[in-house]
Image 1 (spheres, helix red, strand yellow):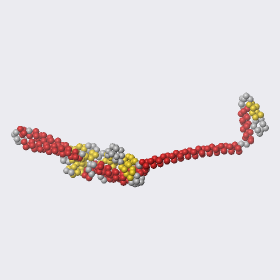
Image 2 (cartoon, rainbow, N blue to C red):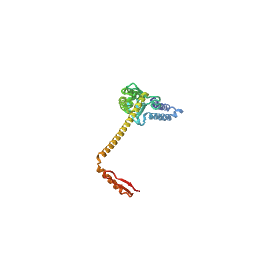
Image 3 (cartoon, rainbow, N blue to C red):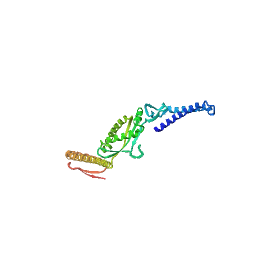
Image 4 (cartoon, one colour):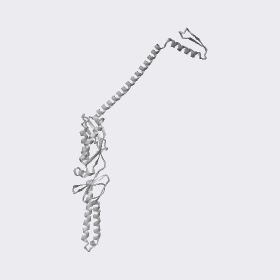
Length: 313
């Protein structure tokens, strides 16, 4: 892109130079009385138009929204930054644009998903010596005020020179402090925070600002995944058995309370009912029978035994 911009500026300057040459030619032939001399005025006007067009395109530069421009004159980088809008510049200056919007650099194991067309996921060793595959997205932006230093010290290919190697190195350096299972589960947020801090410090030194770091996926070895699934199944079975045992204990307690109630009832009957109370209850029952409309015969005993009731109809 820099080569294209450089060539385009040279084309505009070359157009101005051609215009100046044409003007000189017009003055040179103006004193001649031949046919060529008659067209000297037209030649001067054409040359002047070419000079104006060339200088206009060379001196006025429009910077698009979300970009800044860095001026370079004969290889020397100017510290002044051109911001979005119309800018008046040195006609011989070369302008290199920098995108200052949020950029996304993704390293993924899925083909055509990341910045690389192939498998670009990180394969790192954990503290327990297992290989873990990590998919990562880095959200960052170029600091506009730092664009001249980036062009001077790094160039325009900062993705390959800074973003990619710094991110991959930070992940490898921090992953060795965690076991594979911890990276996958309990320590994932802590791991992400640590690599964020590492990358952020490195980016800040080079004029880049890290906005967000996304650990998109962590893939464990197949043997480790199988062990985790087996552990989860065992924990689920244990929880199920705990529930069953709790239910059985509750049922046993219910039966114990029921049996205790029956025993208490029987004890009350055997110790609390006297002969007089039984006789009183018998009289009440006979009274209710006597109120019945059916004919019956009641044979009373000697008061100690229950009466004999002979029904009628």
